[in-house]
Image 1 (spheres, rainbow, N blue to C red):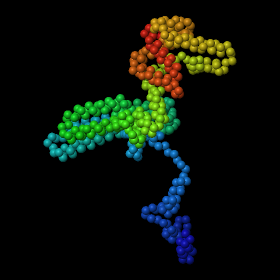
Image 2 (image 1 turned 180 degrees about the vertical axis):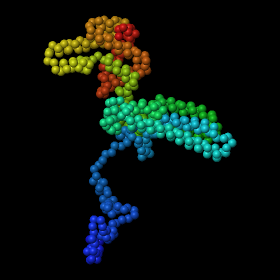
Image 3 (image 1 turned 120 degrees about the vertical axis):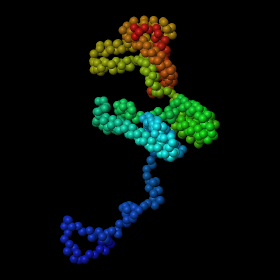
Image 4 (image 1 turned 90 degrees about the vertical axis):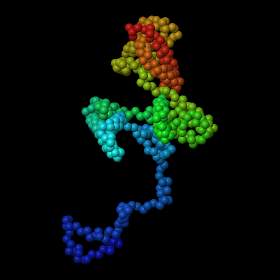
Length: 493
């Protein structure tokens, strides 16, 4: 800077003759400063950057950085976020695009309209070139109409999303008014989306179409059904394929759809048992983990333990498999109804009965908290003790080994002892009626519920499962309630 400015020597009288104001600006002092800028066409901002580090300096900087532990794809559940196919060995098999039901419907309409318009508009005596040109024009017009329908559907959904204040009911409307939609709780957002989807007319709804690949991933039953359907269609079309080329093309198409439905067909229990390569087993277990988490994963682990001659691996695989097979919270809607009846059938303890009475009667809760009258407290204790003992007496009758007719007579006799006994007997008579009605309506779900609740009892160490004793008592009560329900009249309920 000093060299450049020192080299600039204007005439002595130049500054004396100049009279600069705020309007007249003089830029002559910048002329000699231009060579100071190291400017190039490749990087105009190169002059403002520091010196580039040599490789050794880069390594020193990297070593001085703190160590960062990143979660791998193996550890992170990426079901909500699409994965990139960054590694050929770990393809994102579950993350595939699925069209909406509206797109599939309009696709079928495009194919149908093309055929109808081609038969109606293309003359039979036209040349091949003219036919191709007219068919392409027809297809373009149909695709434009399809895109118009899809765009209209998107605009209707955008309209619903943009007018949530006028569509949603009151509690959600206030939450949307006071907060950004993306900042709400995920359950509230799901509820809002469901309400908006119901508000949109059915022909404009953008719902995911049922996808064959996802159904095959989640259900072995559907997977076998799809494979069977592919084989049947292949056998039907095989008679129409006259040439070897057509047969090869048919086989290629059938194999393609088999891979879509079951891409890991080569991984079987026999193949795992005969495998002698640890790396192959590791890759198979990785593929199974990313695809659908099939139970063959445990076979891979057990086989790896055999190859490494480590018994602890087999023990660990067996333990994890038993936990995997434990149906603790895997109730469907009908089985959940059976489970609610199951919980009601278990007789209440003193604490449970008291909590139930306090929840139903707030005055009782206030009395127990603030009353100092010992007589009132004694009366309350005597009341719930009487009801607990009466319910236990009813349960003793139901779990006994008496024949059905004697059990019904004993139940009526116990119900006539006192008002508390009558309430307890009426409770189990009502349960018998509801259980029989549900069991007759859903016999398969009732059988599967009994299997699952027995598994819950076997794994009673799990926090959400009842103890084995309660499971044994509940299943015994269920058997008795089903057997006596035919002997009870509706007047007794």
